Length: 437
Image (cartoon, one colour):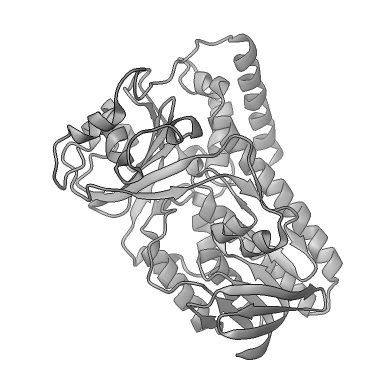
């Protein structure tokens, strides 16, 4: 293969497929490369209302609704032993006229649908085709060596996810100072989900050592994951493939929810070390989604960030190919991505703040500040109104003051294991079989 395209997109996941769809509809020729093949398993199954709006813009929302999915109306947050009760945040309280709900689904369905839609729009797809080297990259053109040969294009968009192809090749990947977590996860049937006022919510369980996610995927299947902070995953004497079960067994709320769960006795593992690959644009390229920056998944920001940045990068390439200034488009995208990624990073970092946790479980929460927080939870990173910004800045200041002087009650988090407990023995002594609990 030695072909010439207007744009080569690295990575055919949702972000890469979305960028390809936009460019093909604008009349550009697009080569879509992926080192794997479809269908395939991917994590990242919890979507936000802003994700829904992005899929609606692409004309793909009805296709999503035709796939197995579960409606998502908000987030339920609890301590591991239900101390201080639960806090429920509904997307209906989002400020502005954005989407007021969302949905979850297994990524195997979404990814396959989106890459097929990219092909229908006119993209040339090459699977099992990894990028081996970057031969040239400038505003005049790019050249890549791939498993299928040499690829030439006027421009390049990296949507390669955590592989972050250009970030690695260019040596710009920088890890976060403390968000070095590892996730242990699997899919199960018959999990007890949040109910009552929290019905239809994503379940988030807070621990001193990390947190659990509970994501309904369809009528029966649920994604369960345990995200362990560095202080635990680097010292835990339990095999990685047994750590989800170990953590579930030591967390009262999860024991309850997994009492009748049926699924694998082992779990999958992925490192979700938070990083950035600044700059997000350069001669001949844009970095999109996780290829630009990967955030801790606590607020389910990944897919939203990928689709939003894919739209911005694709529009930049369209304007460049129409005769626009490449330098101006690179600067515009860099400013946009820095602003949006910065907002998302602050939201994620806030979750790990003791001040935020104290206010999260405080007896009283000012409604208007909560609405500002929920608006960001809905994924409105790219179009923050002044009213939302003021509320979020006020909430951030309150969290900082709480962390320093404690004007609200301190909330000690639930701990998985007291000192002196043999973690491995706890797993070995559990009831064997296909049920996790």
